[in-house]
Amino acid sequence: MAQGSSGIILGSFLFTILFLILSIYLGYLILYTLFIIFLIFSLFNLFFFRDPNRIIPECSQAVLSPADGKVLQIIEEFEPYFTNSNAIRISIFLSVFNVHVNRNPVSGIVSYFVHNPGKYFAAFKEKASMENEQTQIGITTKSGHKIMFKQIAGIIARRIVCNLAEGNEIKVGDRMGLIRYGSRADIFLPTSSKILADVNQILKGGETIIALLPENDSVSVEQIKSEIPELEPT
Image 1 (cartoon, rainbow, N blue to C red):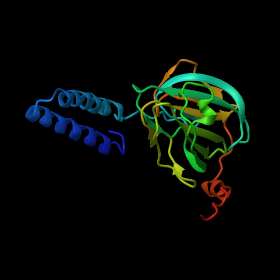
Image 2 (image 1 turned 120 degrees about the horizontal axis):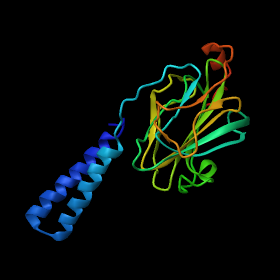
Image 3 (image 1 turned 180 degrees about the horizontal axis):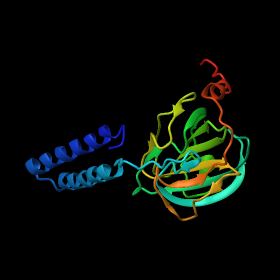
Image 4 (image 1 turned 45 degrees about the vertical axis):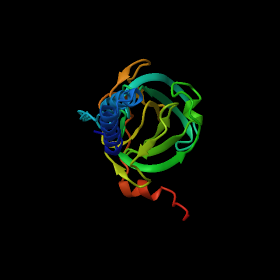
């Protein structure tokens, strides 16, 4: 099960048992109906919060899909928050039937992290990428490439979980968070990347290679961390 899901699963099953007992002893139809509703919801939570292991490809240039889902769009556009340059955006739609655990698309240092509260348009709509609630994670690889990854809430998803923070050193394919009940993930890659993903392709997070980064000279972890802006005290 996905990290942080035990409370939701346990809570839904406790309500299921409660309404079962009440329906047996009191015999009200409404209680039996609530038992059936919570039973379905509990079984769905078991399915939704599954967290299967993945076989992580060993390729230093590979960019892995950060999420399970279907490729909505592949487009070149300006990315103003982290790379401040043109980038190739790959948008991935996660339906409620997909695994919702997110994984690191590359290894590197988290150089930028922002959570933006926003709206809750349907995740497959174009404006969801800019206007919906989201986390923006900027990663600098050891070869100096800058990659932006967004976790985007949808019309149903109202809870984004992210376990990363600025300065973290991360490994490709590791679990980094989840988005509950339908969502979207956008990833912004250097324009010189070789894109392997196709529109409408079904992806597996942490397993499907969606692009290959160009080879660069390696950069030390210390050099990357030295370029991360100091956070002002709050």
